[in-house]
Length: 372
Ligand code: COA
Image 1 (cartoon, helix red, strand yellow):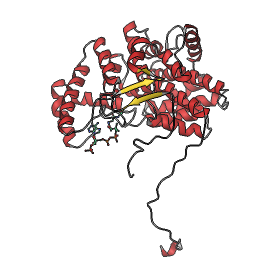
Image 2 (tube, helix red, strand yellow):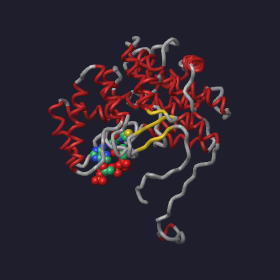
Image 3 (cartoon, helix red, strand yellow):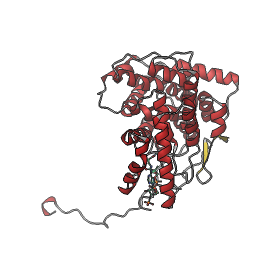
Image 4 (cartoon, protein in one colour):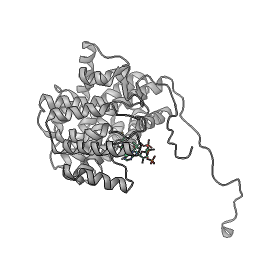
C-alpha cells in the first residue's frame, strides 16, 4: 500500500474519456483520439467533452461565438499579471490569475449547471489570453488583444507572437490542444473533482487543478523535456547524455506513464505534426533520445515509452512558444477536460473523502512539556 499512488484504483464512473493502458488507446466520449485529431477542431472537442456529443454546424457556430465573447479579461486581471514578479513561474501566475477571475465573475458562486457551462466556456476562452499576456508582459511588450474572428488555437498564437499564424501553424496548435484536452482521472483532474465535490466553485476547482498540473511529474514535464534537449545541445551527444542520466538513476522527462504500458497514442500524432512543420534540430535530437531510451528500457525489461510531453516540447518550440510557457499551453487545453469533469462530478455529487491506514505510534498520553 505504501507509496502505491492509488495506482489502478477505480474511484468513480465517468463518461468523459476511456484509456486502455495495455492497448495504448484513448477515446473521448467513444471517439478515438486519432480520428478527433484528424477530423475535428479543438472547439468541437470542447463541446464533446462538455455535452457528450459532437456538435452539428449550428451548435459549433454558437459555441465558437460564445468562446469569442469570452476571450477578453477584466482590466484588474491585466494589472495583476503586470504586478507579478518576473521570477514567478508562468503557471504560478496563471493559477493566481484564474483565482482572481473568480473575484470578478458575476456567476462565480452560481452552481447551477447552466452557470457552470457558461463559466466552462468563458474560462476556456480566457486561459489563452492570460497565457499570452504573461509572455508578452515578461518580454516588456504590450499584451495583444484577442481577435473575435480567430479560432482559439490561432488566437493563442496570434496573441503570443503578435501576428496571425499560417494555416499549418494554427492547425498544429489546434491538434496539440485536442491531444491534451482530456485524460481521465489524471492528478490535476482528480484534484479539480475533489475540490468541486465539496461544492466549492468552478474557479476554486481550476485553481487546484492548475497547481497540480504544474508539477514536473505531470504537466511540468514538457518544459523539462525542452531543458533536457537544450542541455544535450547536439543530436550526437544524445546517447552519452541519456546513458549518464540513467546511470545516475534519473528519470528521463517525457518518458513513462502511470497508465500506458505501451506507446502513448498521442506521442506519434505529435511526432508527425513536428515532421510536417519541417525538420528541426530538436526533433532530430528527440528521435535520437527515443531510440536510445527504447533500447535501454528494453534491455532493462521496463515498459517505458515516450509520452505526450516528449514531442510536444519540440512542436511548441517550433510554433514560437517560449519554453517556460509549455505547461501553460497544456493547461489551455486541459481546462476543457477539467471543466467537463467538474460538470460530471456535480451531476451526482458526493464528497470525495478516502481514508488512510494509520501506521503511527500506538495510543499514548500527553506528558507535561517539562517532562518531554
Ligand atoms: N526514465 C527512466 N526510468 C523511468 C522513467 C523515466 N522517465 N519512468 C519510469 N521509469 C522507471 C522507474 O524508475 C521504475 O523503475 P524501477 O522499477 O527499477 O524502480 C519503473 O520505470 C516504473 O516507474 P514508476 O516510477 O513506478 O512509474 P510511476 O507510474 O510511478 O510514474 C511517471 C509515472 C510519469 C511519474 C514517471 O514515468 C516519470 O516520472 N516520468 C517522467 C516525467 C514525465 O514525463 N511525466 C509526464 C507524464 S505524462
